[in-house]
Length: 240
Figure 1 (tube, rainbow, N blue to C red):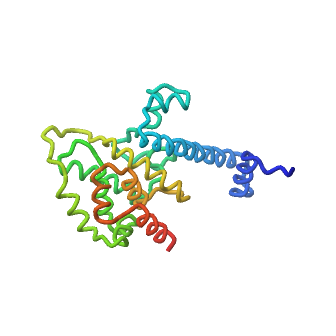
Figure 2 (figure 1 turned 45 degrees about the vertical axis):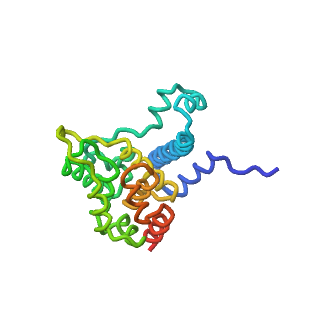
Figure 3 (figure 1 turned 90 degrees about the vertical axis):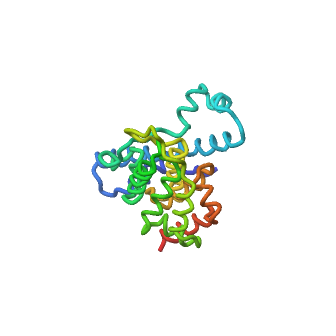
């Protein structure tokens, strides 16, 4: 029987091929980066099926039992995580929640924060992120919306007219809503599924659609921007 290369051997060869002639310390750094990439992929692998189980109605207790942890530990690991209020100083560092974001995708998150504040909302949710994508109208996310036959201005109007009333208790830091956190998680997963190194505005659009429950997903579905059409246009635009 012919032995196939082990996963470890394949990874070692990958590092060596990617950094020919590098000194040993540079290879250590490259190996650490490869390991971090694998950790992210592994988290999204399990997260994909956890989302499937949650969608099928299984509880955190049941999920925890099948991965050998408590209900609280399962929920803490796989429920949408908190994200920082600011993304400028440390976001470029790999491993930060915004570390793989393009500059324009980070700007969309900044715009989402500003949109929530402008409309007097106590949480940053999917509608604020979609407005940010529309405002960053020269990038892939907005271009994909246009390619689906929807005018960005019409989409903005459809969202704005359905925004919740302003809160009378708005003050200080505006955190992300659960739907907003989930969108960021699903955007990262969309990037990995497509084999992309970075998370761009197109991946944020796919995250909004996949999230499925927020106002953004509802408006996108009503206007005909489906996951299949959006993904096809994003792949086409990124390949152009």
